[in-house]
Each structure stands twice: as structure tokens, then as C-alpha cells.
Image (cartoon, rainbow, N blue to C red; front, side, top):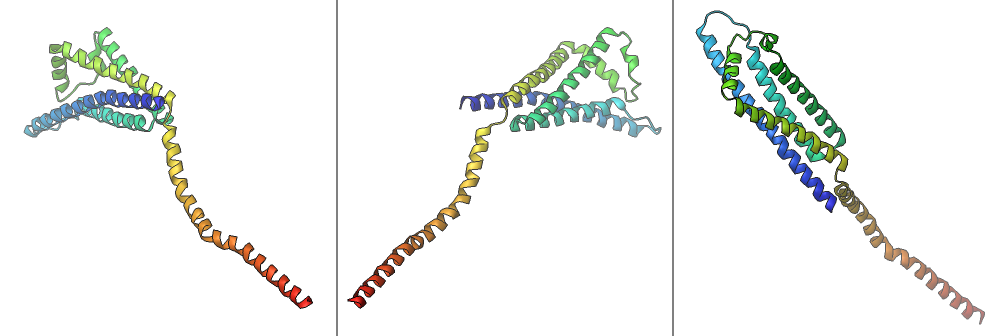
Length: 218
């Protein structure tokens, strides 16, 4: 009983922490869609054809990836399957490494902007200005998302150690075997009196034959 309560608490906490990553993914998707709409409005006013805005599509893909990662995390937390939890933790770990590599490059490399191709939409420059003007808020948001990812890995390891709830599996097995046993009980109840009656009738017939033989001999 205590193990089931601990497992349920870990599952609920993992889902809650995983939802933080999902909310960040939805916010990124909404921001990317807003930038994409503004980009199409600007392109519609121009006659020339511009290259694809890589920053907007990358932002949109990152948001979709975070939402899919959140869905897989909820499935892994609900089933408590070892393989699902392992895959989820590996993906989150790789994502943290990529985020750390980008952060180190931006902080230590003064010419980090040259590592990215030019953005024809200009949204990349607007995003940099927004981050610099609201650096403290962006810093807290980024740290919260990374902390949620690290905590999800730790909770996933704990849940993988606890394993799935086997008591429910035993209960489901018992529920499936009881109906299969009921026809046997019915068959026994139906055939039981006849089977017990056959020895009694044979004994009566034998005693009746013995009485007739005694009368004939006398």
C-alpha cells in the first residue's frame, strides 16, 4: 500500500514538472506563429521572393518538439514502463546538453552571431533586442525550464526504480480468471447430482437382485 502511494506521488509530480516544459513549448509555438504571420504580411507587400525564414521555422519546430516530448513524458509517467522512461530521460538529457552548448557558445564567444546564417525576416534581431531588454525575466524562465527538465530526469529514475504497479496486474488477472472458472462450477453443479445418483441406483439394483435370488432358492 505504501509503495503504491509513493509511486502515485512520483507519477503526479513527474506529470506536473513535465507540464512546465509543455507550457514552454506552447508559448514558443504561439510566438513562432505570430512571427510567421507578420512575416507573410511583409512578404505580401513585396514583389521579390525572399529566402525562407530559418529562425521562425526553427522556433516553431522547437515548440512542437517540446510539446511532443511532454506527451511522451506523460505516457511514460502513466505507464511507469522502464523502456519508455529510459527513452524519455535520454531525450531530455540530450536536450539539456544542446541547451548548455548553445548557452556556453553565446556567453563565451563574442562573435557567436556569426555562427548562425543571416535571417531574412529580421525576427532574429528583434528577439535579441527583446532578450537584452528583458534579460532577468528571460533568465528566470530559462532556468525554470532547465530545472524542470533536470527534475523530470530525477523523477523518471525514481519511477523506473519503483517499477509499474504489479498489484493492479494481479487484480486484473484474477478478474479474468474468475469468469473462466464459473462455467466449470456450473458444469459441476449440473452434473453433480446425476453423478452421485449413479452409485446409489446401482447399489439398489444389486440388492434387489440378491433378494430375488434368495426367494428363488427358498
